[in-house]
Length: 390
Image 1 (tube, one colour):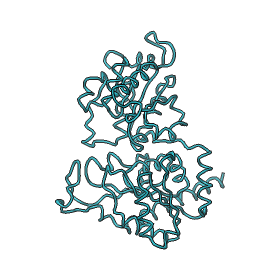
Image 2 (tube, one colour; image 1 turned 135 degrees about the horizontal axis):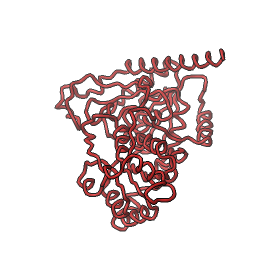
Image 3 (cartoon, one colour; image 1 turned 90 degrees about the vertical axis):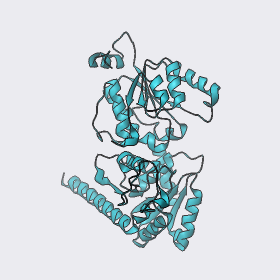
Image 4 (cartoon, helix red, strand yellow; image 1 turned 30 degrees about the vertical axis):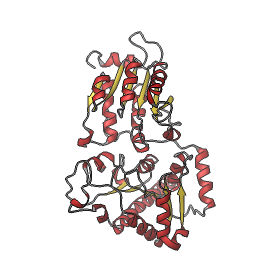
């Protein structure tokens, strides 16, 4: 950005300089999964804090829009549909037209996709920011930044924020938290659904989300079963949740629990059900247990204590993909004590520590849950005492 000094850049973005009238139109792109998008939400807030007069559009897949549409920092949404309306050559030109007609001056690509990179170039967006990683990024981003995310030098959310330096923004790590939106109507619908299934708001509710998309190693199924048994024996209410592709997993867990399955509440996300309902369920919970997956970040974004399990493989590690919190003590992250040395994938039986995730015991997990619940209880009691004394 050597051709623009900071003062002129700020004026330009605010729509007060360089002969531009009206709010500067900025497009932020994150065309992938739930967790990745949630870890991008600090970017939206930071842009609006620094350039409040700008008009911010977010381009994402339609599945994640329900948890973003009420956030005050987003002015407009566009959807990226690579398997539908943006499929093939015809879809590519449709995408380019959709972007061009909105007259964006800045585009910030948080996760690069060749089709989007070329579309931004053809749409004649003046400043195209993105990570220099894949071949197309060097060709089509004129405000690119070299990021070696596979080296895992920082959190994914911080990699996203680092790109904002190309538009004059610098901000420290974990100063802006991830956020989602939950409407009052969804919260009421979720509460009614839980009450119909015997939920008692006066007892601790632990949500257990055992499934994931396979982007990292998971805790063993049998451990989740034993954890649920242990929580029930301690008098906790247990809510088991799963995504549309995880119904079979939930059925196996119920079968393994036997008669105890009658004491848990099970939520199988229907294919047509938006993810905000799952967020509402987590909002009623006292703690959420989940592996390295989007629902974990969903729970963190609504400020719920979490327990999670991460492998020692570098690109799957908690350093990059763990809970993004200012107060990291609000999350319990268990990692196997194994000298892994692997950067990208598990060696399986070739590794002396395999299967290392099994070494994370149910006893450890229950101890971490107890610790988090005790901390939460003290915080609530402290707040009540302060309120009473005032």
